[in-house]
Image 1 (cartoon, one colour):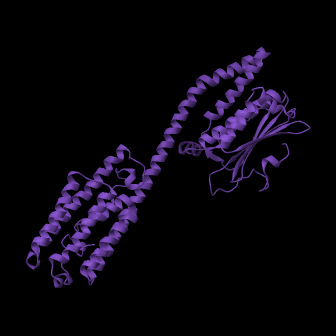
Image 2 (tube, rainbow, N blue to C red):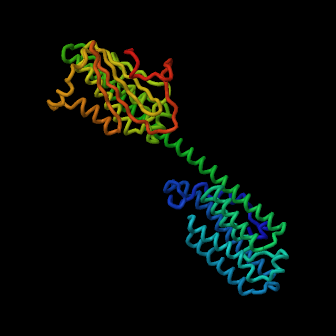
Length: 430
C-alpha cells in the first residue's frame, strides 16, 4: 500500500459496490460463463466507479509530485512513472478489461511504480516519509481483485502492495504500517461484501427458476386436467359399463389416469429444485406404480439419483410390473420395495403369482422374446448395476434391481420401523 494511502479522498463505501457479479468470462473467474442482462447494467455502473477512482488517484499522484518537485532528485524519472500510469488508466477507460489477467498487469505496474520511487528520490527523502510516486493509484488494483476474486483476492492484492511498500521504504514508519493495514481492511471488506452479493444473487436466481418451473408445471397440469385426465376417466367409466374386453382397456386407461394425476399433483418445490439441478427423488418417480394390487414401500428420506439413471430404473420397474400383470395371474399382488444403504440403491419387485418355471427365461430369450433380458437386465447393465430374477418353489417371483449410488457422504436411509441393517431383499413377502 502506498505510504500516503491514508489521505485517499475516495469513500471506501463506494468501492463496496463493485460488482457483486462481473461480466468477465468464466475462464478468468472460475464462475459460470455470462451474467443476466439486468446484472450487466448494475455491474457496468460499479466498474465505472473503479475507473473514476483510478483517474482521481492519478490526479492526486500528479499533484503530490508537483508539490514536492523541488526535492525530487530525478524529476524526469517521476514524470515517466506518471506517464506509464496515465497510459494504463487511459487504456482501462477506453477499453475496459475486467479480467484477472488485466488486473494482474495493473497490480504489477502499481508495485513497480512504488519501487521506482527509490530511483527518483534520495534515501534520506524516502526515510523522511515522502509520498511514493504512484501514491494511492495501486489501490484500484486491490479493489479490482476484490471484485473479481472476493475477499481472498482483495487480501492477496493488498498484501502484495503492502509488502512492496515495506521494501521501498526499507525502515517502516508508523504511516507505512497504518496504510498497509488500511489496504488489507479495504481489500478484505470489499471482497467480503462482493461475496455476499454474489451468494444473494445466486439464491434469488434459483428462487426465480423454481418459481418459473412451478408456474409452468401448474399450466401443464391445468391443460392435462381439462383434457387428457377427463378423457381417460370417461373411458374408464364407460368401459367398465360395457364389460368384456372393453373393461380391460378401461382398466388400462384408469392406470394411465393415475400416473398422470400423480405427475401433475407434485407440488413440493424441493422436488422441483432437484429436477432443475439434475437429480431426481426415486420415491417420487415411483409413486405412479402404486395402484390396486401394487404397493410401494419407500424410505422416509429422499433417494436421489441423476435424472437419467432414475428414469431408467423406473422403466425397468414398469417392465417388471408389466410382466406381473401378464403372467402372474389375475389375483396376484405385487410389492415394490425401495431402499438406499448409501452404497447401492435397491429396488425389489415381489409378486404372489404362479412363479416362473425353471429355464423359462432362457427359453424366452431363445425364442426372441427379450422383455426381461432387454427391458430389465439390459437397462441395469447399462447403468453399471445388476438385475436378478428368482422364483420360489411355492410360487411368487422376486426381481431385485441394484444400482451403485455414486453420491458420496450420504447416510443410509431406512424404512419406518425397520432395523438399520434390514434390506428389502431379505424381508419376507409383505
